[in-house]
Image (cartoon, rainbow, N blue to C red; front, side, top):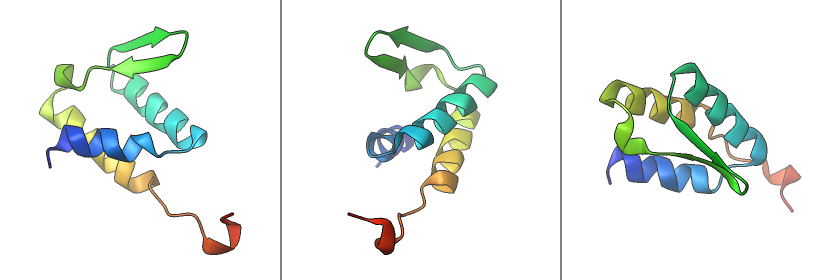
Length: 72
C-alpha cells in the first residue's frame, strides 16, 4: 500500500479533533488546501516526499485507539 493510500484510509476514520490536528499540520508545512462548503481537500500529489513522510508520521502519532470503556 502506498503512503498516499495509507494516509487517505487512516484519515477517513478520524474524529473531528484528529482532522483539525492534521489540518493544522498541513498549514504548518504550507500545503495547498482547497476549501469548499462541504470541507477541505488536499492534493497529495503536490506534496514532496518529505512532506508525505511527515504527514504519515503525524497520523501515526495521533492515531490512538479509543479505550474500550469509552466506546459505545
